[in-house]
Image (cartoon, rainbow, N blue to C red; front, side, top):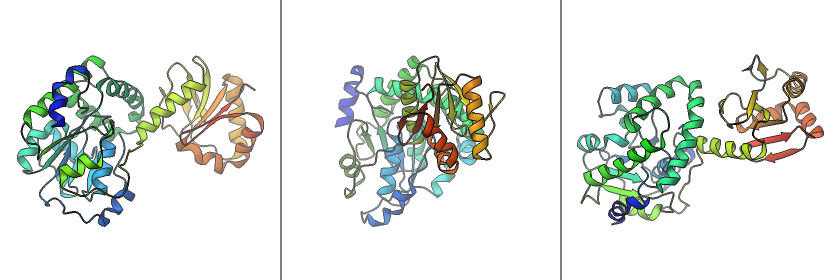
Length: 342
Protein backbone atom coordinates (compact mmCIF):
# COMPACT_ATOMS: atom_id res chain seq x y z
CA UNK A 1 0.00 0.00 0.00
CA UNK A 2 1.12 3.55 -0.75
CA UNK A 3 1.04 4.68 2.88
CA UNK A 4 3.35 1.82 3.88
CA UNK A 5 5.82 2.94 1.22
CA UNK A 6 5.61 6.48 2.56
CA UNK A 7 6.45 5.25 6.02
CA UNK A 8 9.48 3.39 4.71
CA UNK A 9 10.83 6.39 2.81
CA UNK A 10 10.16 9.15 5.33
CA UNK A 11 13.88 9.67 5.92
CA UNK A 12 14.15 10.82 2.29
CA UNK A 13 11.58 13.59 2.75
CA UNK A 14 8.88 11.62 0.90
CA UNK A 15 6.59 11.59 3.88
CA UNK A 16 3.01 12.50 4.35
CA UNK A 17 2.08 16.08 5.02
CA UNK A 18 -0.11 16.07 7.66
CA UNK A 19 -6.75 29.68 7.89
CA UNK A 20 -9.66 31.04 7.12
CA UNK A 21 -11.75 29.10 4.39
CA UNK A 22 -15.13 27.59 4.89
CA UNK A 23 -16.34 24.94 2.46
CA UNK A 24 -17.33 26.09 -1.00
CA UNK A 25 -21.07 26.64 -0.95
CA UNK A 26 -21.28 26.35 -4.74
CA UNK A 27 -19.51 23.01 -4.65
CA UNK A 28 -21.73 21.82 -1.83
CA UNK A 29 -24.87 22.93 -3.65
CA UNK A 30 -24.25 20.42 -6.43
CA UNK A 31 -23.69 17.44 -4.18
CA UNK A 32 -27.24 16.20 -4.84
CA UNK A 33 -26.14 15.39 -8.39
CA UNK A 34 -23.90 12.66 -7.02
CA UNK A 35 -25.99 9.51 -6.64
CA UNK A 36 -23.27 7.40 -5.01
CA UNK A 37 -24.07 5.11 -2.15
CA UNK A 38 -23.39 7.46 0.72
CA UNK A 39 -21.71 6.73 4.01
CA UNK A 40 -24.06 5.80 6.81
CA UNK A 41 -25.17 8.79 8.86
CA UNK A 42 -23.19 7.67 11.92
CA UNK A 43 -19.97 7.40 9.88
CA UNK A 44 -17.79 10.49 9.81
CA UNK A 45 -14.82 11.55 7.71
CA UNK A 46 -11.86 13.18 9.42
CA UNK A 47 -9.03 14.93 7.60
CA UNK A 48 -5.94 14.44 9.75
CA UNK A 49 -3.50 16.48 7.68
CA UNK A 50 -1.48 19.27 9.23
CA UNK A 51 -1.71 22.87 8.04
CA UNK A 52 -0.79 23.55 4.38
CA UNK A 53 -1.17 19.95 3.19
CA UNK A 54 -4.13 20.32 0.86
CA UNK A 55 -6.77 20.32 3.59
CA UNK A 56 -8.90 23.01 1.91
CA UNK A 57 -8.92 21.00 -1.31
CA UNK A 58 -9.90 17.85 0.57
CA UNK A 59 -12.79 19.71 2.22
CA UNK A 60 -14.07 20.90 -1.15
CA UNK A 61 -13.75 17.38 -2.59
CA UNK A 62 -15.75 15.84 0.26
CA UNK A 63 -18.52 18.38 -0.20
CA UNK A 64 -18.67 17.66 -3.93
CA UNK A 65 -19.11 13.99 -3.05
CA UNK A 66 -22.05 14.87 -0.82
CA UNK A 67 -20.20 14.51 2.48
CA UNK A 68 -21.02 17.78 4.18
CA UNK A 69 -17.69 18.88 5.64
CA UNK A 70 -16.19 21.88 7.38
CA UNK A 71 -12.62 23.12 7.18
CA UNK A 72 -10.89 24.31 10.37
CA UNK A 73 -13.92 24.99 12.61
CA UNK A 74 -12.98 27.58 15.22
CA UNK A 75 -16.31 28.48 16.79
CA UNK A 76 -16.63 29.00 20.55
CA UNK A 77 -18.39 25.69 21.22
CA UNK A 78 -15.75 23.66 19.40
CA UNK A 79 -13.07 25.59 21.27
CA UNK A 80 -14.67 24.87 24.66
CA UNK A 81 -15.20 21.19 23.85
CA UNK A 82 -11.64 20.57 22.67
CA UNK A 83 -10.16 22.56 25.54
CA UNK A 84 -12.20 20.44 27.96
CA UNK A 85 -11.20 17.13 26.38
CA UNK A 86 -14.71 16.48 25.02
CA UNK A 87 -14.31 14.95 21.55
CA UNK A 88 -18.01 14.17 21.07
CA UNK A 89 -18.16 17.35 19.01
CA UNK A 90 -21.43 19.24 18.70
CA UNK A 91 -20.47 20.51 15.25
CA UNK A 92 -20.75 16.95 13.94
CA UNK A 93 -24.51 17.23 14.40
CA UNK A 94 -24.37 19.60 11.41
CA UNK A 95 -21.47 18.11 9.46
CA UNK A 96 -20.34 14.64 8.48
CA UNK A 97 -16.71 15.63 8.06
CA UNK A 98 -14.09 17.86 9.69
CA UNK A 99 -10.70 18.64 8.17
CA UNK A 100 -7.43 20.19 9.44
CA UNK A 101 -5.66 20.52 12.78
CA UNK A 102 -8.77 20.96 15.00
CA UNK A 103 -9.13 17.15 14.67
CA UNK A 104 -5.66 16.04 13.49
CA UNK A 105 -4.22 15.13 16.94
CA UNK A 106 -7.38 13.46 18.27
CA UNK A 107 -7.83 10.57 15.84
CA UNK A 108 -7.66 7.87 18.53
CA UNK A 109 -10.46 9.46 20.56
CA UNK A 110 -12.55 10.19 17.46
CA UNK A 111 -12.07 6.61 16.29
CA UNK A 112 -13.60 5.35 19.56
CA UNK A 113 -16.50 7.81 19.65
CA UNK A 114 -17.37 7.48 15.94
CA UNK A 115 -16.77 3.81 14.98
CA UNK A 116 -16.43 2.83 11.32
CA UNK A 117 -15.48 6.38 10.38
CA UNK A 118 -12.97 7.23 7.66
CA UNK A 119 -9.65 8.98 8.25
CA UNK A 120 -7.71 10.76 5.49
CA UNK A 121 -4.14 11.88 6.03
CA UNK A 122 -2.94 14.37 3.40
CA UNK A 123 0.75 14.24 2.52
CA UNK A 124 3.39 16.50 0.97
CA UNK A 125 7.12 16.80 0.41
CA UNK A 126 8.32 17.90 3.84
CA UNK A 127 10.73 20.60 2.76
CA UNK A 128 8.05 22.25 0.62
CA UNK A 129 5.64 21.92 3.51
CA UNK A 130 8.08 23.64 5.88
CA UNK A 131 8.65 26.48 3.41
CA UNK A 132 4.91 26.97 3.03
CA UNK A 133 4.32 26.92 6.79
CA UNK A 134 7.03 29.49 7.36
CA UNK A 135 5.37 32.03 5.07
CA UNK A 136 1.89 31.11 6.31
CA UNK A 137 2.80 31.70 9.97
CA UNK A 138 4.63 34.92 9.23
CA UNK A 139 1.65 36.44 7.48
CA UNK A 140 -0.99 35.08 9.81
CA UNK A 141 0.72 36.17 13.04
CA UNK A 142 -0.11 39.79 12.34
CA UNK A 143 -3.35 39.24 10.39
CA UNK A 144 -5.06 37.28 13.16
CA UNK A 145 -4.83 40.23 15.55
CA UNK A 146 -7.84 41.63 13.70
CA UNK A 147 -9.90 38.50 14.49
CA UNK A 148 -9.73 37.73 18.24
CA UNK A 149 -12.00 34.66 18.14
CA UNK A 150 -9.87 33.05 15.44
CA UNK A 151 -6.66 34.06 17.22
CA UNK A 152 -7.74 32.48 20.50
CA UNK A 153 -8.62 29.20 18.81
CA UNK A 154 -5.56 29.17 16.56
CA UNK A 155 -3.15 29.76 19.43
CA UNK A 156 -4.77 26.96 21.43
CA UNK A 157 -4.75 24.36 18.66
CA UNK A 158 -1.25 25.39 17.48
CA UNK A 159 0.09 24.81 20.99
CA UNK A 160 -1.63 21.40 21.05
CA UNK A 161 -0.40 20.29 17.63
CA UNK A 162 2.97 22.01 17.22
CA UNK A 163 3.98 22.83 20.77
CA UNK A 164 4.67 26.44 19.78
CA UNK A 165 2.79 29.56 18.73
CA UNK A 166 5.52 30.70 16.34
CA UNK A 167 7.05 28.93 13.39
CA UNK A 168 10.15 26.99 14.33
CA UNK A 169 11.53 24.91 11.48
CA UNK A 170 13.19 22.30 13.67
CA UNK A 171 10.13 21.87 15.87
CA UNK A 172 7.70 21.71 12.92
CA UNK A 173 9.90 19.12 11.23
CA UNK A 174 9.89 16.99 14.38
CA UNK A 175 6.10 17.26 14.74
CA UNK A 176 5.61 16.40 11.07
CA UNK A 177 7.62 13.18 11.37
CA UNK A 178 6.06 12.20 14.70
CA UNK A 179 2.49 12.78 13.52
CA UNK A 180 3.16 10.65 10.45
CA UNK A 181 4.67 7.82 12.46
CA UNK A 182 1.97 7.82 15.11
CA UNK A 183 -0.89 7.86 12.61
CA UNK A 184 0.65 5.07 10.53
CA UNK A 185 1.22 2.98 13.65
CA UNK A 186 -2.28 3.53 14.97
CA UNK A 187 -4.03 2.62 11.71
CA UNK A 188 -1.70 -0.26 10.83
CA UNK A 189 -3.54 -2.98 8.85
CA UNK A 190 -6.69 -0.84 8.66
CA UNK A 191 -6.60 0.16 5.01
CA UNK A 192 -10.41 0.26 4.87
CA UNK A 193 -10.45 3.04 7.48
CA UNK A 194 -7.30 5.02 6.70
CA UNK A 195 -5.99 6.71 3.56
CA UNK A 196 -2.84 8.72 2.91
CA UNK A 197 -3.59 11.17 0.10
CA UNK A 198 -0.94 13.22 -1.68
CA UNK A 199 -3.06 15.99 -3.19
CA UNK A 200 -0.07 18.27 -3.67
CA UNK A 201 1.68 15.45 -5.54
CA UNK A 202 -1.21 14.91 -7.95
CA UNK A 203 -3.46 12.35 -6.27
CA UNK A 204 -7.18 13.06 -6.22
CA UNK A 205 -10.49 11.52 -7.16
CA UNK A 206 -9.27 8.02 -8.00
CA UNK A 207 -7.65 7.41 -4.61
CA UNK A 208 -10.29 9.23 -2.55
CA UNK A 209 -13.34 7.74 -4.26
CA UNK A 210 -11.92 4.22 -4.18
CA UNK A 211 -11.33 4.62 -0.45
CA UNK A 212 -14.84 5.95 0.19
CA UNK A 213 -16.55 3.50 -2.16
CA UNK A 214 -17.91 6.22 -4.43
CA UNK A 215 -17.81 6.86 -8.14
CA UNK A 216 -15.54 9.56 -9.55
CA UNK A 217 -17.40 12.85 -10.25
CA UNK A 218 -17.39 14.23 -13.77
CA UNK A 219 -15.37 17.30 -12.83
CA UNK A 220 -11.75 18.13 -11.98
CA UNK A 221 -10.49 17.52 -8.47
CA UNK A 222 -10.64 20.83 -6.59
CA UNK A 223 -7.45 22.68 -5.78
CA UNK A 224 -8.58 25.35 -3.37
CA UNK A 225 -6.93 28.72 -3.76
CA UNK A 226 -7.66 29.66 -0.16
CA UNK A 227 -7.33 33.19 1.21
CA UNK A 228 -4.01 32.62 2.96
CA UNK A 229 -2.54 31.04 -0.16
CA UNK A 230 -3.55 34.09 -2.18
CA UNK A 231 -2.01 36.30 0.50
CA UNK A 232 1.30 34.43 0.26
CA UNK A 233 1.31 34.75 -3.52
CA UNK A 234 0.53 38.46 -3.29
CA UNK A 235 3.37 38.96 -0.80
CA UNK A 236 5.82 37.31 -3.17
CA UNK A 237 4.56 39.32 -6.15
CA UNK A 238 4.80 42.66 -4.36
CA UNK A 239 8.30 41.83 -3.11
CA UNK A 240 9.41 41.17 -6.69
CA UNK A 241 8.25 44.63 -7.81
CA UNK A 242 8.91 46.87 -4.79
CA UNK A 243 12.65 46.87 -4.02
CA UNK A 244 13.87 46.16 -0.52
CA UNK A 245 14.02 49.32 1.58
CA UNK A 246 11.35 51.15 -0.45
CA UNK A 247 8.18 52.72 0.96
CA UNK A 248 4.82 51.86 -0.57
CA UNK A 249 1.19 52.78 0.06
CA UNK A 250 -1.07 49.78 0.72
CA UNK A 251 -4.85 49.90 0.27
CA UNK A 252 -6.02 46.61 1.77
CA UNK A 253 -8.71 47.59 4.29
CA UNK A 254 -6.30 46.36 6.99
CA UNK A 255 -6.55 42.79 5.75
CA UNK A 256 -2.94 41.95 4.89
CA UNK A 257 -1.09 42.87 8.07
CA UNK A 258 1.92 45.05 8.81
CA UNK A 259 4.41 42.32 7.86
CA UNK A 260 2.93 41.74 4.42
CA UNK A 261 6.22 42.34 2.58
CA UNK A 262 9.25 42.17 4.91
CA UNK A 263 12.05 44.63 4.27
CA UNK A 264 9.69 47.21 2.83
CA UNK A 265 7.84 49.99 4.63
CA UNK A 266 4.08 49.98 4.10
CA UNK A 267 1.78 52.96 4.70
CA UNK A 268 -1.91 52.27 5.33
CA UNK A 269 -4.34 54.17 3.14
CA UNK A 270 -6.06 56.26 4.41
CA UNK A 271 -3.53 57.02 7.14
CA UNK A 272 -3.52 59.04 10.35
CA UNK A 273 -0.49 58.95 12.65
CA UNK A 274 0.70 55.75 11.05
CA UNK A 275 -2.62 53.94 11.56
CA UNK A 276 -5.36 52.88 9.14
CA UNK A 277 -8.08 55.53 9.04
CA UNK A 278 -10.72 53.89 6.86
CA UNK A 279 -11.87 54.36 3.28
CA UNK A 280 -11.86 57.90 1.85
CA UNK A 281 -15.21 59.71 1.87
CA UNK A 282 -14.80 60.91 -1.71
CA UNK A 283 -12.46 61.13 -4.72
CA UNK A 284 -11.01 64.49 -3.72
CA UNK A 285 -9.93 63.16 -0.32
CA UNK A 286 -8.47 60.03 -1.88
CA UNK A 287 -6.36 62.06 -4.32
CA UNK A 288 -5.24 64.59 -1.70
CA UNK A 289 -4.26 61.93 0.83
CA UNK A 290 -2.49 59.86 -1.80
CA UNK A 291 -0.40 62.83 -2.90
CA UNK A 292 0.35 63.76 0.71
CA UNK A 293 1.78 60.30 1.41
CA UNK A 294 3.68 60.26 -1.86
CA UNK A 295 5.35 63.61 -1.11
CA UNK A 296 5.79 63.55 2.67
CA UNK A 297 6.66 59.87 3.10
CA UNK A 298 8.54 59.38 -0.19
CA UNK A 299 6.25 56.55 -1.24
CA UNK A 300 7.30 55.16 -4.62
CA UNK A 301 4.50 52.64 -5.16
CA UNK A 302 0.83 52.20 -4.34
CA UNK A 303 -0.66 48.70 -4.15
CA UNK A 304 -4.32 47.71 -3.98
CA UNK A 305 -5.07 44.31 -2.47
CA UNK A 306 -8.07 42.39 -3.79
CA UNK A 307 -10.07 43.31 -0.68
CA UNK A 308 -9.88 46.96 -1.83
CA UNK A 309 -10.38 46.47 -5.57
CA UNK A 310 -13.84 47.96 -5.22
CA UNK A 311 -12.18 51.30 -4.43
CA UNK A 312 -11.04 51.62 -8.05
CA UNK A 313 -14.62 51.12 -9.22
CA UNK A 314 -16.20 53.37 -6.62
CA UNK A 315 -13.63 56.19 -6.70
CA UNK A 316 -13.62 56.63 -10.46
CA UNK A 317 -11.88 60.01 -10.47
CA UNK A 318 -9.13 58.66 -8.23
CA UNK A 319 -8.76 55.65 -10.52
CA UNK A 320 -8.50 57.89 -13.59
CA UNK A 321 -6.00 60.12 -11.77
CA UNK A 322 -3.67 57.19 -11.07
CA UNK A 323 -3.91 55.72 -14.56
CA UNK A 324 -3.27 59.08 -16.22
CA UNK A 325 -0.08 59.80 -14.25
CA UNK A 326 1.55 56.52 -13.19
CA UNK A 327 2.19 53.22 -14.97
CA UNK A 328 0.33 50.18 -13.68
CA UNK A 329 3.10 47.58 -13.33
CA UNK A 330 1.01 44.66 -12.07
CA UNK A 331 -2.67 43.77 -12.34
CA UNK A 332 -4.02 40.33 -11.50
CA UNK A 333 -6.67 38.78 -9.26
CA UNK A 334 -4.66 39.61 -6.11
CA UNK A 335 -2.89 42.94 -6.62
CA UNK A 336 -2.92 46.14 -8.65
CA UNK A 337 0.35 48.10 -8.31
CA UNK A 338 1.29 51.52 -9.67
CA UNK A 339 4.89 52.72 -9.93
CA UNK A 340 5.02 56.32 -8.65
CA UNK A 341 8.63 56.98 -9.60
CA UNK A 342 7.82 58.03 -13.19
